[in-house]
Structure formats: structure tokens, C-alpha cells
Length: 382
Image: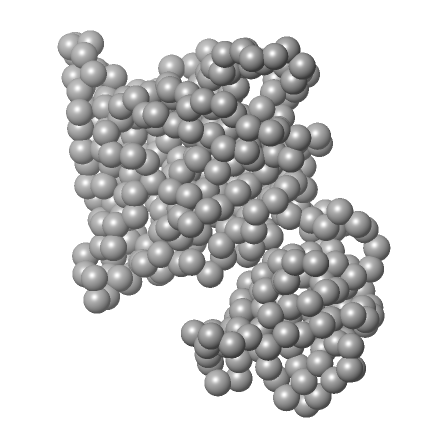
């Protein structure tokens, strides 16, 4: 089934309201009128269109559409599919062109062009390049696209998220942080960052029916100080585009996109690794202490489990026992830039397996029991 990553129709003004996204903000008093295009590649739309609703692995078409800067419309030169990375190379013949913005649409089948009969289900990182006569290529767009139906397993937890480094040279951004809030299918993000050394902050929201989203972030300017009394609402300026893929409720890959300074149409991409970390360091199991509700399938009744005693089994695992000592939550840890992140957990009662969880957050775990039924473990507020 198709998955659209941008609103249909480029250069269309949109009325956007931003809610409370960080703890130190009380409210935004008004809605603000967003600029029509916040990122350099916002004038383009890319989507995968399934060939069959009953067999989504059949190779879907990739449709590229939008507004070109002149009447010399591009054509597809070639494509490259490697793992989850898909690169598309366009070429625009250099000739005398009317300097008028022109709608266009291109269609190709990346899997068949790569000699494949199927395109594996999952999320693909799609980069769009423009070829030049001298043999160089210019990066002009980036999207996350999903082949197959929406995957709702990795729904993000609301709260503070941080950028951390990884072993494959993805850097941490010191002093940067995000506040993420999800209500229904709406994902709202505030990004706390810097520009030329001065603090700056961005807001944006977008529908996210699955686990990937592209959010246009607007920079807020000219707002009232806390003690200045009644004043006008802040204005906004074009900012960044955040492309995000949630791997679990507390872990995500992200790509920030901005226009390359001094270049027409080119974009820059910053890879990011985002996590939601506990405030307290030390014994990682202590962060999962408390009362939890275990829900199996669509059952209306939940089993309450009080996890009280945290133990570190070794450097890679921890265990939390319930008050009676019969139920244990056993979790495996993943090291992310020196931070111990729980990546998978099992809940056992004596010798019986209650559930295996492959989606682990600080407040919610999801997986399945020994019978294959979906299971959730949800923290109860204190």
C-alpha cells in the first residue's frame, strides 16, 4: 500500500499549531502560519506504490513528483539498490529552458532495475541525486519509505530524547536534545539546538501512522520573555527537516536535512542516533522497578506485577524480581556510546515463560507469549 511522506502538493501554505513540547515551556498562545516549504527538498515527493495489496513484497513502483525549477524536466538515468539504501540518479538535459516552475512525475521500479523479482518488506533510505555534465552528482532529496503495510510495533514513548554517538561514526551532538510527544497518530517534536553558538529551538508536527515520519521543523523567533507580560505570538522561519525511524519505543535512527549553504537545490544530511535515557545512571535495572500491568491480546483484565528487586547478572544483562520472588524480568543490554540500553527482555514465572519482549522502552514493553499471542507490559504511574 502506498506510503506518503509529504503532504500532496508542494508550495501549499499550511496552518500549524504547536503544543507544549518541553517541560520548561508552559504554552504557545496561538497557532502560527508556517512557511510553505521548510526544507530545500520539500518541493519533491517520493512514494512507493504497491503492485498488489495481497502480495506487498511484489516490487512496488517508486513515484517521484513535484515542481521542477524550469521547463527542462529530468529523467531517470539509473538507480542503485543495496540493502536498505536506494539511490536514484536523475539527469536534466542542458538546453534553452523556459525559467518557469513546472510540475513533473517520474515512475520506476527499483527492484526490477536491480534484477530482483521482489522488494523485501521494511524501511528504505532513498536518496535522489542530480547528474551534471562534468560527471559529478548533486544530492537533492532524502526520504524514508516503507515497503509493505504500516508497522506500529515501535511506537515512541513521549519524553526527552538525546543524541548519542555510535561505533559506525555517527556523532553525538553535545547540548542538543529533543522532546517527543505522540498523541494518536500525531507526532510532535521540539528540537533544542544552536546556531552560530546561540541557543535556538525548532518545532514541528506530522501524522505518523507507522514508525517512520518526516517532520518539517520551524525555528521560533521573536517570542515574548516569561516576565514581559502579554505579547504577540512568536514568528517562525524555515528550519530543518527531521526524518526519523523508530527502532523501539526508546531508540531511533534519524536524519536531519537542510539546504546546503551557497548552493542551489543541494541538501546536506546529518545522521543521528537517538535514545530515551533514564535520568539516573548506575544499576540499569532500577529504572524498571515499580508496578506494571501485563496485558495479553485483547483481554480486558490485566495482571499487576510489582517489580521490586534489581540485580545485575553480568555486564550484558540484568534481572528484576517481583515482591514474592517468583516472577523475574530478565533483560539484555546493548551498549550505545557508553549508555546501557535494554534491547530485549523476557518475563518468567518460575520455569514458565510469560512473554518475550523485542520492543523495549522505559514505560512500555511489547512482544508475544509462548502461544504467539501479543503481550504488553505497561508501567503504572506512581
